[in-house]
Image (cartoon, rainbow, N blue to C red; front, side):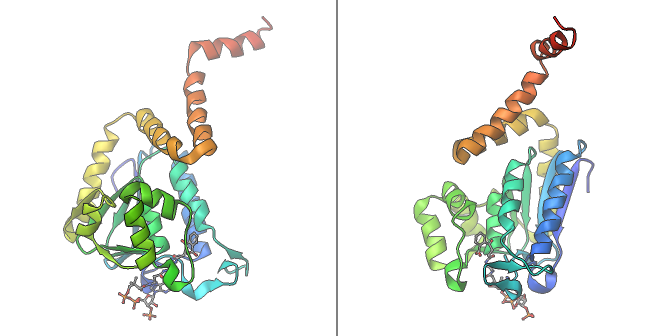
Length: 244
Ligand code: S0N
């Protein structure tokens, strides 16, 4: 990987990169690492192999009340991962090779940008297999493709080609499979030439409109960060320490 670019890969090819609670825990930890690492500018989220980005929750471990990890506790911790991706103050690019289905589809929806290979297939399956995602998986999806289209995606549970996804505004770019990695790196390098703080702020601002009080809190946190950088703020701290 190029300097400053982190790649997080779901590596469970035997199940088309379906995730278990442990997979999600590891991805959350990875997001925390890239957040704190000042040398990382851009994050790529992808799936191992050429057949799938991610096929959603591992149906073999879906129990009553959630997905059951090795500790026996039912969870839906993928929602925590959605929040991490959204809050990460750096661009996250979904690099989609093959299937992005169910919760795997939601993962790319939550990412800031999506670059897909021509063999990519997109779709939700929830109502067909006894679930639904009423969070980012529906409301944010509707912001991408509109209300009618997102209702179609969820009600019909069909699959869409990369070209159809591009036409409906679900992905940013489609490239031949052999060019996927290179095309994604090309975008990363362009982004890396730009101001990290400006990118951070624009992501916060775009999120804030949709995320209500939580979005305002995130945006305000960064406004405070910028205020800390001013002389006015430094003077306030000095005045306190010097008992003026
Ligand atoms: C991806 C599909 C269409 C590919 O079909 P294909 O090419 O015919 O391959 P298969 O033979 O089906 O698959 C190859 C092997 O991989 C296993 N496998 C695939 N997907 C899964 C999976 N999700 N879980 C477990 N195993 C999987 C196959 O069984 C097969 O194994 P072998 O070789 O041993 O037979 C096709 O595979 C497909 O349709 N997959 C299932 C897609 C799906 O329905 N995913 C789950 C959707 N739900 C979620 O993701 C829920 C999680 C969630 O995000 C959520 C979030 C918030 C609120 C609620 C939820 C929620 O929905 O609960």
